[in-house]
Image 1 (spheres, rainbow, N blue to C red):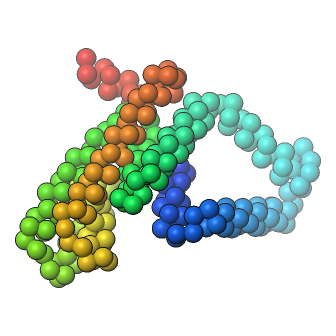
Image 2 (cartoon, rainbow, N blue to C red):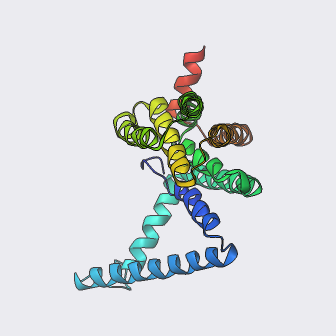
Image 3 (cartoon, one colour):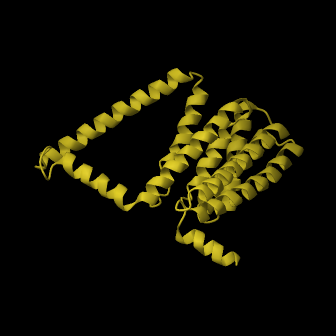
Length: 246
């Protein structure tokens, strides 16, 4: 999990967003699961056929099934902390998804996106830093977007901001996360404004509110889990931050 820039639980939030925006509820969710299982089965078959053509047997001491099982057994045995952390982070996303569902009429899906982005940090120290920087970035975007509303920005100005912030995302991410997060917030909000024609303090406030709330919920849940499971975040980044505070 920690070796990848975008852990798989990041996509849980995106799937939730897609489901809620389809308006189909459970039916759409069921279709997504069905297609996901079908595509997974097809990929497994293609992989198996490719390996079989190379002379790798399906069933033997060195077969595909046996080697796969050994690989995962070894992984679970050697990486208990990673497995535990992944399960906990999935649970956190699940809880925040339900919170987002409760406030869906007020763009609650921004909660899930914000939480998922914070959890990309992986370990306790990076999660804490990303959460704090994401909140600061949201406040910066609020100031700029508030200025657009105050000056009654026209369509040309909004498009210019969308283009500039898109360039900013590529320039600042991931090393300058505060400014990168601010650009993401501005770009997403301006996109909503252009699509809906609603240039108001309401949409700006909603974006900032749910972004900050998503980050806070994630940090609080990670903190609680860290206290309940002392071995969850025993990593170098956390220890480094603790020593620095002393």
